[in-house]
Length: 504
Image (cartoon, rainbow, N blue to C red):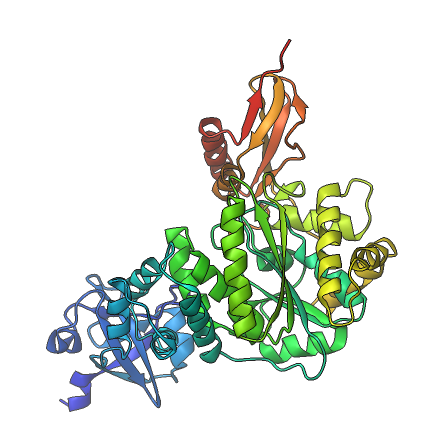
């Protein structure tokens, strides 16, 4: 028998989506598996043709894969792009160069520029397993990254990705640190700023711990998975765009860390700063406004936390040559009516179209943020931005620009509605004393958001509003009866509205 039969396996496509993690599947009786001593979750280097990749091995005990085959997950298949009938060879990978730095960080050491660069290089090269990345994320959580380390991590994230150059002149951007349901101001701000002649190439993340990210909401209305040439074409044509950052890979290390952070449901200040600013710098932004909602159930819960995060953002931005402004906003309650991609998209369109029933709080906050960003621009005059932003919105300029951006990205479509809805009513009369943003977001996620774009919930109630027993507090939207029931069951146990009985 040919030696190659023993040392190589025929490549097939598994058809399994493992997100960004490359995985291979081998039969447990495979001669390569047994000879090399490979076991489940082993890190393996696979070579197909002239390409190689470090992957995680899953061992198959059934007949899904034969003993002379290796099946590739979608991430591995796309990275290796094997030809028909290709054979793959395998070996144990060389230990990651950053292993020492990772171990040192886990034990509390401070790392320098070179160590963070090595860690991010190994991250994007898949030389670190998800377990190792989870250890790194945990070791950086809380206050375990100081200012210098935050800057080093940011610089390293930028270095291992692509970086856009838009030529001479300012490039504006806006980002919200998150934690506030609804609050979908970004599409409105981009439309206003681009309508006034500025460049604003907005790259956005999908939801990490929320029911919707900007990319999720925008994708309801237009394609967002543009590559770099397409993104550049849209910006050159319309001045702005709203695209998913994961497809343009401006900060690929951050995209991988986000994948690990998502199931852990947390991110630290240092990682938040590195994540946000690395993508802004990579996108070629020169002037960035950060919206920082502050409230007891927002991501930033106190003024002291906001002060600390503001200092960290400012220090890192200054070290990397980025002009940064921070706008501290009210994070005590949701903004807009909808929570979930399609429901938030409906709110955005109502504001842009100047509809009579457009959410007033979303409209006002978008104008304030657009105004602050316009004031931050090199030719901005302090205090005039809001007037300019209001005029662009009221006149229809912003709507026209938004529609043009959507068409340039691949075509506009109206948001649709979920087939199943149900209202949750107040069990007592009184005045709303507080709203738990995290509980609202949890209900929207259990209803299916953001995986199901039409899922989520709607509520127009705010702190101070008076409600009567039996009055609808919010309406849950779901794609299936099961998801609707699941969300309603949770809502009954974990009510997001604190209703105080009125004094008689």
